[in-house]
Image 1 (tube, rainbow, N blue to C red):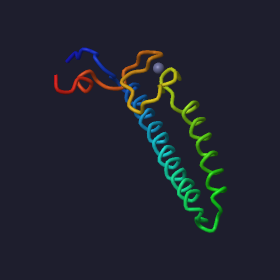
Image 2 (cartoon, protein in one colour):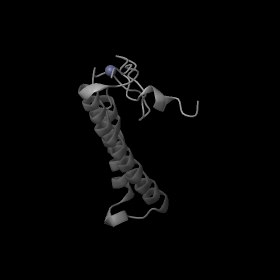
Image 3 (cartoon, rainbow, N blue to C red):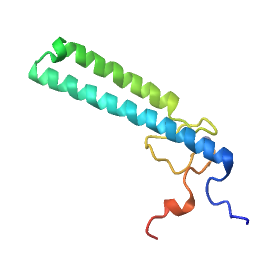
Image 4 (spheres, rainbow, N blue to C red):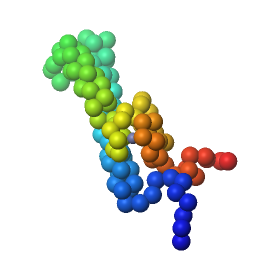
Length: 113
Ligand SMILES: [Zn+2]
């Protein structure tokens, strides 16, 4: 049976997509960590309350450090597994704008049509 290659196909495509999913998970976990610690910093600052015995200045510095780390993680880690090109700001890219590799099959892209 010969399928028309409309989306990612083959073992190499499976490997590329699994690498992309792993990278997406790392990005999302990093984002969640950043949001949680930023919230702790803001609340500690606003309430002037030492969370876990640490002053709000500690939490603000930690949040700023995590923000920088997240930006670096995004710049260095959120890249196409095939060509290494940047994937942009969204975490569900349909294709790589650099090499054109499709991460989703055609039928998943057009929902409801
Ligand atoms: Zn690419």
